[in-house]
Amino acid sequence: MFAYNAWYLGAWADEIKPQGLLGRVLLNQPVVFYRTEDGTALALEDRCCHRALPLSHGCVIGDQLQCGYHGLVYDRQGVCVKVPGQERVPLKAKVRSYPVVEQDEMLWIWMGEPALADPALIIRHPWHNDPGWAWIKDRYSINANYQLITDNLMDLTHVGYVHQRTIGGTPQAHSEAETQTTRSDASVNVTRWMMNSVPPPAYTAGHKFNTPTVDRWMEIDFFPPAVVRIHTGAKDVGTGAREGNREGGLAFRGLNLQTPETEKSTHYFWSGARTYSPDEPEGRNKLLTSLPPTFAEDKVVVEAQQASLDRQGGVPLVMIASDAGLVHARKLVAAMIEKEATAKESANREAPIPNAPPNAPPNAPPDAQPDAQPETQRQLHEQTS
Ligand code: FES
Ligand SMILES: [Fe+2]
Image (cartoon, rainbow, N blue to C red; front, side, top):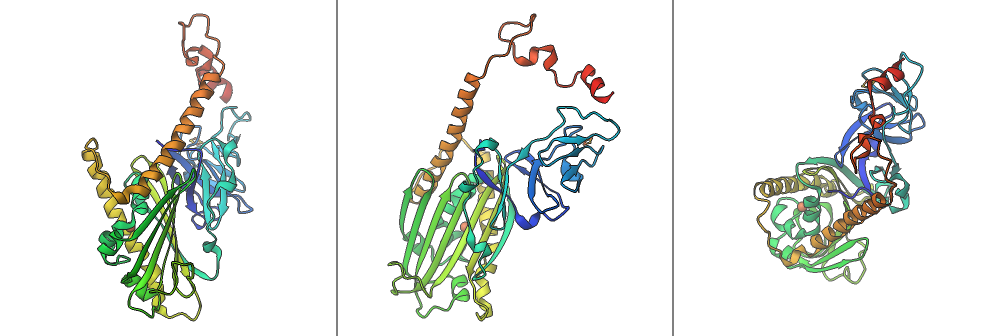
C-alpha cells in the first residue's frame, strides 16, 4: 500500500538527457521520463495504449513521443495526436501524464491526483547547488520494501554495528547517544548527541580535529512518505557545538529518498554533501567516498531483513527504545494512506449510479452495459476505417 498524493523522487535530473528516454517503475506504475526541446522534463505512462509496448522503447520527436512499435505519437499531455496510416485518432488513444517538478538537481513526480500536486510541498535541498559544498549521489536498487529503508535511517544505533568499517565509531557510543524524538503532523525529528566520543575513520580523514575526541551530532528529519534528511557533524570536544556554535566543525548534509518500485523493491536515491573549499587537503574527500560502501552495507541488511520477513512474516517483532523514530514515521505514512482511502471511499459514495441496461440484473456493474466495452469489433472497425 502506498500514499499516492505525495511528491516522490523519480530520477536525478541528469539521468534524463536531451532526446533520451528513461523508463522506470514507480509505485507499481510504469513511467517514462523525457525532455521537450526547451529542456522541460515530462513523465508519461510507459505503456502504449495500442499494443502496450513501453514508450521508453520509442523516441523523442520535438516535444512529442513516438512509440517504437507502430509509430503512434503522443503529445506532452499523453494524448495521441497521430496514428500512422489513418486520419482519425481514436478518442481513447491516450496515456496518463504525471506532474513533474525539476528542482535542486532532482526530478520530483506526483503519482496521485494531479489537482493536488502543489510544488510548495517539495522538500528543498539547496546544498546541491551551493558551490561551498561538494556532493555525490547515486541510486541503489534495493530488494526490500521502502519502509524498511526508512526504518534503517530513523534508528542510527545501527551505525556502530553495520558501519564499523566506514562511518561507525564505537557501538556503545551510538547506543548510549542522548536521543530525543519529536513528531508533528508533517514530520518526525530524531536528534542524537554523542558527546566526547571517538570520531570514526571517515571523519578524521575528512576533517582536521584538534582534540582526540569530539562532540558529534545527528539530526534526522523524516518527511512522509519517503524522504529522510540527515544533518550530521562533529567538532572539537567542549567547544560549544551543542550550544549552537558549530563554526569550524565538520558538517554533512545527507538526503535519502526511498521511492517504492513495487511493494518489495525500492529505488533508493541518496546524496551526501560536505563543506568545500578549493585549498583543502586531498584526504577530505574521504568523507564522501565513504558513502557508497556505507549505503551498500545498509542494502545488505535491509534485503536480508525483507527475505527474513517473507519467510516468517507472521512472527511478531519486539520493540525497543531506539525504535521511537521509526514508529512515529510509520504512523505518519499510515495516516496518509488512510486519508486517501477515506477520500476515495466518500468519492465513490457520492458518484452517481449509472443507469443499468434494460436486461441487466439488479446492481449490475457499469461494465454490464453493452456499449461500455472499450473495444468491440464495431468500434475497432470505426477507429480503423
Ligand atoms: S504498440 Fe505502440 S504503436 Fe503499436
Ligand atoms: Fe546505515
